[in-house]
Image 1: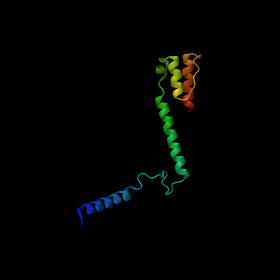
Image 2: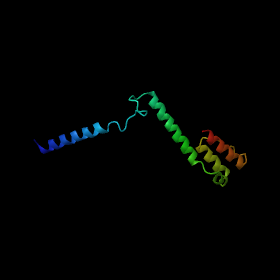
Image 3: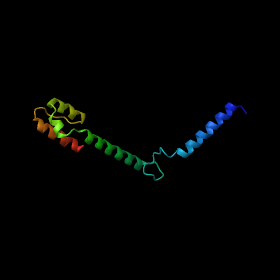
Length: 105
């Protein structure tokens, strides 16, 4: 038998064995009940929402850092969080509004 063909056969067999033993490592069955169903989707969405909420909370600067910002910077930061701030208010009220709205999310 030609050595090239033998090499190809060995690679295919090894690849098949690796796939067979690792096929469940990337499974979509999140709740491990044996079925990929709507419940798996719900769990995945809940985990994603929790992760996004944690990320949003992590990125909001402290009150002292917010106080050091200008009103225009606060307004821009608010937009990043999906909050529309009123620049006619005092800076302290803008900060309070921003913190309250981000906390709701």
